[in-house]
Length: 512
Image 1: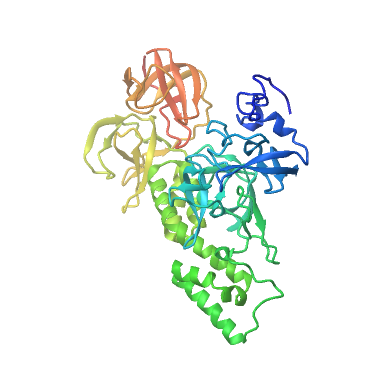
Image 2: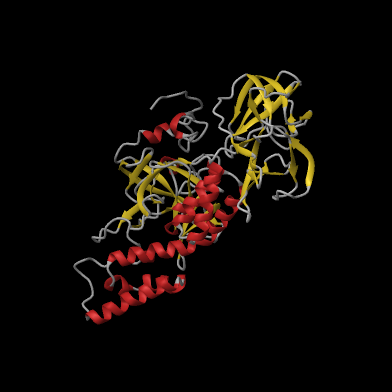
């Protein structure tokens, strides 16, 4: 422990933020106000502990250092955070400004934090913290108010969870490392950016009786890890099962299988939470039924997310949605359609107009060879970016230009090939470029957004010189600074692969 500085003095009520022992605000503690006196509590020290259930400080004695850093085991409660301990002497509850104080409660959760709530009807479901109630030690969640600590599973660094792996199609053990970069995602020790829909509390653990934090206690009944928790019911030991006729056992198993086949979540939950079912049905069947129930609950949201991602054109979003939808048991037809969409996004969206006769081509208004023509055309050798490839009933592949000019086609009956895929492997760097995206916007800064002023727009086939290249990671863009006109343009969308400009200048390009 490194002492950064000391200020103030020891007040009559013991150390607090802004006094002795509270200057440490950096490093892995994440800005938490540490109490140096508390860090030196010795076993047997008489202290006071703030009880959220009683709403007041109560006498206590230090037994030992807690297993978690910055906690102590007291004679009245284990794993108590230092923010809820003070030297004996009287006072009030810790203030809301004390970082890890009662403003976040014993689970150390703040407003907006994601967590799991143990519903008596649906089991563990995702929720968000609204506020902590220090008067009774409960939390208001977005799904229910005044929820006791024992019904909440906090997702915090170091917490053990289970993660559904799409590659192995099973739940595996994992540990939370930190919150993910995207909302409602977490970085685990096995994978970063995991959506909360694919995380659950360990199914063979239940909240400790003390209710202090999200610490979990193993059932210890001989069940293997990852088994269904039975809605909080005590597991039946292998030595203490029910002794009933085999016919009744098979009948129970048949009821559970019928509920799974019918995909009736209420009936399936009732069968799972039946004490007799826990005793009569083998653990493999319970695990299968528990996973089936999770799938039924997660499927509607996963299906909606998949449809949105398929239509959105974002490769990263579609990969995440597809993995979650596969885990949730979305129908194979929709999964295959999404996989095909992902495959199209993974293929380079660049094409080149390359007719055998060297003539120009008029862009079509729609996906038809003989369709209406618009006042835009491409010259032989022009490269263009495609946002959609559509197979027509006439066995022709139609290509929608990403800049909105219209449609072209891969081949023309009686003529032959018209367009071919264009392999582009150049790294973006200062040099000569040609605009391939019609009406490319020029802005005064490298920032990207609707509020950015548009200085001018460059037509396709305009040759420009880029003097500086910058990666805008938040906008998933590679940007280029123009020599003339002065300003910035987008070169590449790193997520979708859409390009605004490529290196080199084709014959006939207009120089700026």
